[in-house]
Image 1 (cartoon, rainbow, N blue to C red):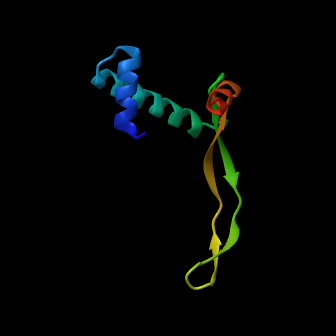
Image 2 (cartoon, rainbow, N blue to C red):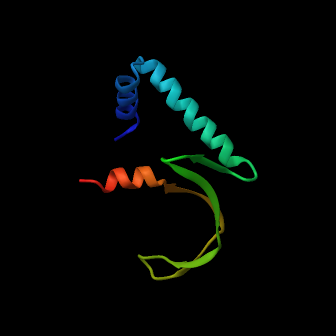
Length: 93
């Protein structure tokens, strides 16, 4: 599912126009992004999951074409951990 398909799904499920659904989705992503940028960046949606920021340490990698070692710098990455309700609903057949 891409962004346009998600907007269509939100519009049909919530009874909103596509324009309002796009505004709602953009507001959600902006709010999550702003929260993750803060010092203790974490967003928890009970039953759905939680977004958090973690630090990935610097490490040595290897260029797959040449085999030469390269240094990969440290960086912050966003993690998502699915909640129990989401995990259970996906696991059902």
